[in-house]
Amino acid sequence: MFCNYIIEICGIGIYNRIIVSDYKRIIKDSCLSRIGEDFGYKIVCYEDIEEFRYLYEGEIKKTQDKYLVLIKEDLYLPYDIRCEFNLIKIDYKKLFPRLNAHVLENSYIMDLDLLYIAHENLYNTMDSESETKKFLQKDMFKKENIREYRESLMGEIDGLLKKDDYKSWTDIALIYSKLEYIRYRCSFEETTGDLAYMLQTKFKEFIFRDYSSLSGYSAFNGPVLLNKSLDYIFMNSGKPALIVMDGMSIVDWLIICEFLEGITYEYNSTYAIIPTITSISRQSLLSGKLPIELEKPFSLAHERKLFIQGAMENGYKEGEIKYNRGYDFDIDCFDKCICVIINDIDDLIHSQKQGNPGMYNDVKLLASGGKINELIRKLHSHGFDIYITSDHGHVETKTIGNPRNMGVETETKSKRTLILKDFADYEEIMDEFSMIEYPGYFLPKDFKYLLCEHDKSFGIKGDVVLSHGGIAIEEVIVPFIKIEGVDYE
Image (cartoon, rainbow, N blue to C red; front, side, top):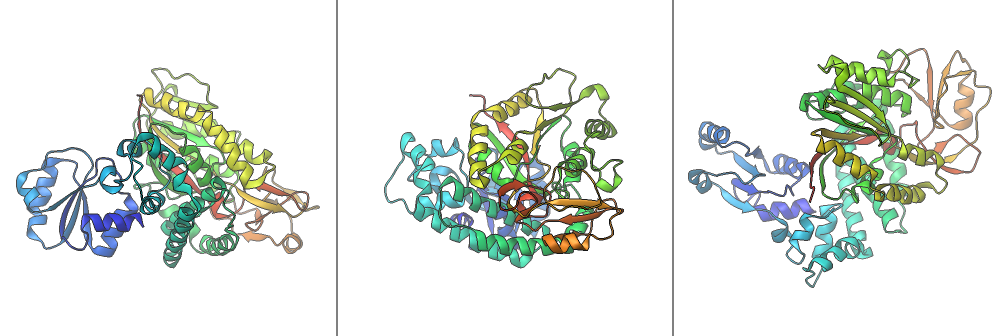
């Protein structure tokens, strides 16, 4: 919806050569991809005058191809090039004239689609700072705006389901998470139950069909599978800091973002290792290896050692590497590669008594306390490039009882996974609890992996709990964030 607005303002489809000045980085990559795919424009980022001159003289002038040139910084643009392009400036004042541009530039906006809908439904100006802040906090979330926004998101999901590839599922995961976030933020009475069942069913089909191929994708544009995270980080930073928020789902990240005042970031996502158990997925994250390559894939005992080893293999000395649990640690001048494990969200998951609504409130309280914000600022002030991700997410489930006489089970904290060895009669458990036999992609082959359905977990029958360990969308697709800037004013 907002992308359609951008397409209209920029004259996409009308002009063949367009230069867009977007100093506030409002236009998202997904919109640029659509402009390229649907309208046939070649997208070029103008970052260096001489480099673009070379491209212009050697290619652009000689073809009839359509070009969209994006300028994200205030760079000199030669007169002869200006004359060959239609020039457009994109900023908040132009896009949302009835609101205060300064406030928009310095506020967290959950989704520009929602802002666009709410602005279109606004028939009077609210351009003072106080009015615009009130609009962003309350008026934007009025029921009529939310209903229109939900319909728009549903339409996007329908289109993405037709693609049914790993990239479309990461987009679906974000959209579905926005629907859930809105539901809890606004106490919206309409549930997503039917949508959830349909998506989880199709996602399970995708996992069994294509998940095993994800390890073959390069980390050049971002880690598709979680174990490639370190490859991407080390390729793009000489002084990285990785914050691992144990158990953080995309919804949790959307809540946390509300309180990242003065912090800008680039959102991406990645696939956790299945089953989504901390020991399996986080060890793969911190070692850069798949579980089948690890000596003890079901234990966290060697986690620190594996991270240090992985960093040293990428050129860091042992004295330059720091692994820490919790917020309270010192940074000295020798530190060049840091990993920080934060267990707060996983602790909330396993102690949660109120399901997803309770989790929303608890994560909001956690984020409002400022510790995450302070950690990011501390690392940034010491010159680190900061990445934030999760080892797995979580899902709300109903408990179905506890299986007994299972034979030899590998000890895990998960209530959604059974890892069995030397057990011949597992079919009985599968039938009794309607479990999924998982093929064990990337896992040791001398075990049986049995997973609960997306909305079920073990425990005293009839409870509603949060858990992880299965193949639900909320567990498998997790945020991968790069911090772009911190405002210290």
